[in-house]
Structures are given as structure tokens and as C-alpha cells.
Length: 91
Image (cartoon, rainbow, N blue to C red; front, side):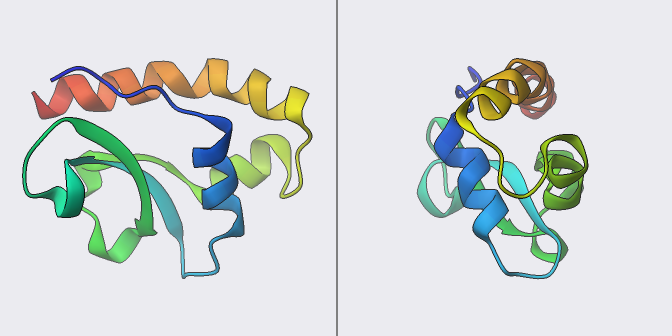
């Protein structure tokens, strides 16, 4: 399966999530029931660790909890290789 492209909206959704230890992760279609890989946010306790791309606290450590557009764009260039790696591991 091909890896989805991480977007500013994905990272922003992670940053505003108030759950306990939210993560960006890859799921296979809606509700993870099959289909193309897509990026979603959920609490890490409910996500298989091999599907996790990044934890919220890692993003906050890297760019803070209120990054501007430039910070987000710079971070996305670092995040996309991880998305690609996680997707390859799910294939």
C-alpha cells in the first residue's frame, strides 16, 4: 500500500486532541476495516504500536503546541519519511 501524505491539518488535529497520549497513526480505510492507508488521530492505548507515526508529545517537543505555518511545513518534511516507513511496514 502506498503511504498517505502528511498534511498541516493532520499535525494540527493531533495538537488540539485532548485525549491521553494521542498519536498520529495509519489506518487501512475508514474504521481500519480495509482500503487505502490514511492518517488519523487516536489515543495511543487503542492503536497497535506498529501503526503509530508520532506521539503528540514528540511533536510538541519539536515545534511547540502552537506552531506557525513555517514550523508546520518544516516539520512535515521530517515527518513524511516516518509515514513512508510505517506504511512500508504495514504492507
